[in-house]
Length: 382
Image (cartoon, rainbow, N blue to C red; front, top):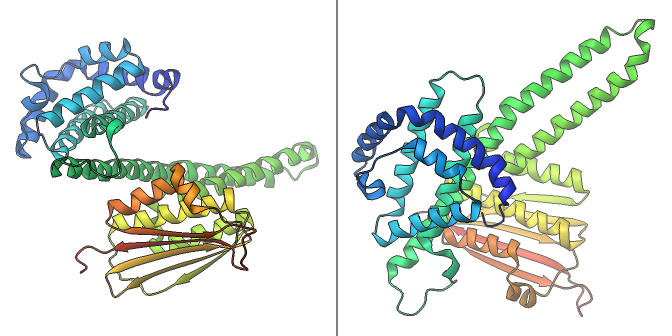
């Protein structure tokens, strides 16, 4: 969250979250007692987090109102760093925070409010706090790609756990947003279009001829909005897996990418096992999105070949090959390209490997373009 501006922090998190916490203030003792019971059942001691002081949402609300984003970030990261120093497991920290969030949401929902704003605000605050605690937990400013000589093994494991959890948080947020877009915004847009079409049928009389062009334009705009929502749902994923399944979602995404960009995408499907872990499905989907995004932005390609298969029920293999201008892999990887670095980290978290070959345009070869191969081992594979 280093790019979060003070104004955006104030408008989207600070002010609405402070108001949500103020609503919870009268129930501080009840929530704290319930949370202590819940985390105790998980084998976690609430005193590891708050000591004997307990929860005081009025105090939290006032502190948040009077804070700035740099101060807030420093405090929460410091809290995460302190928990790490006490050797409290990251899973326990996130589990306890998730339990507290769920209890708070239940109290807000019980108020039968017409608006969901306080719950949404609390959700944003919870997500930001988890990410900042994880950042403090791993001391990300000093994290290097390879552990330093003499670094205890637990440090590397802690960084790996944090990376996995951050990915999980982002995916859960994307899934929630995707589902909301599909179930609420998409549904409402379809109804609006239906009502507009019904109004258009009632305006066939002469006296209504003047508004028909505007109605036609409105229907076209709503249709465009519906298409945009559907594209965003596919981009966000992985909620589409629930409705379509993994392979149909991949087919739909590549088809829509091709239709939108006019870049031909050929998808070859090999053998795939039935029960691919969701973590691997999401990773492959995101990696495909990242690769095609790079093709669109940088490759000037006319066509892309994508193949997806599994070797001996042990390794998932995704290959994306374009006929674009290519690039100098030594120079790009040496600079630490953000897109390729993110792809590499996503693969390595699952114990996989990524291989990149590229032939820049103008090189002394008839072959040009970029080939990316991702190998993801399945759990339990030899």
